[in-house]
Length: 341
Image (tube, rainbow, N blue to C red; front, side, top):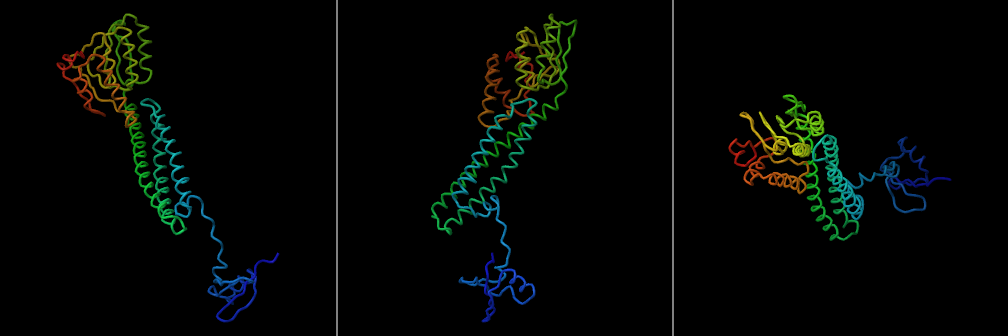
């Protein structure tokens, strides 16, 4: 089938009709110029030869079209912005819930959540810019200007919410990474029997499985009555489990040097508690991985636990007045007044 044919005009001179291949050949030979006018046979309206022979532009993809504001406002808002944001918000929320409060899973969780935050930042910018441009073009396409203004207002509110959620996710990833680094820096856990099996020494970090190791050692040394503690702390949950083991075994606890952070949970579980001449306790508020209400609930639960052990409120408030790597070290007199030792 023959292709379309066109008349060619330069000034008052008109030739043709010509097929597209012939027009291309005339242009290459210099017998026609790019500014010469062409009109389809049987049609109306002239266009430049350059425009007629220009290869069609490749269609832009979904991402490029949204970024340039070329999609309808309704689709830009409801599909590319609202719908996609809803899916991504659910994904971030689910992943944040899967981040463990402590333990070996912190590093991969921190890496995955951090990578997601880095991905969502440019996605959010793409959504906002593209939808804003679509709103600007909405009236030019015959749409109502009110819808464009409403879309921009919702964009502003949505952007504020997105920034808050991204900040929370980034803070969760940072806390997870920091806690993982602290755990990795803990010295190796050591457990061994002393004085013919009548005493047990626990030193180093409190890691997952420390309570099981203590139980096994107590089973091998049923006459053990005193637990020596020399630890910078470690996992809070493991500290609670160790405390249960100490209570069940009716052990006395003794600190010859240091007992910080989660170690204090074990010390306070002793039937009787002793501080050596150079012994000291180190308290601080827990550093939860989850910011916001979840983290606050964890801190409140730890505060209730210390109060349930009979420690006076003033002592607990002092213990929780510092956080992170800092410690509150009560004097021997303060420990005695609070009946902590």
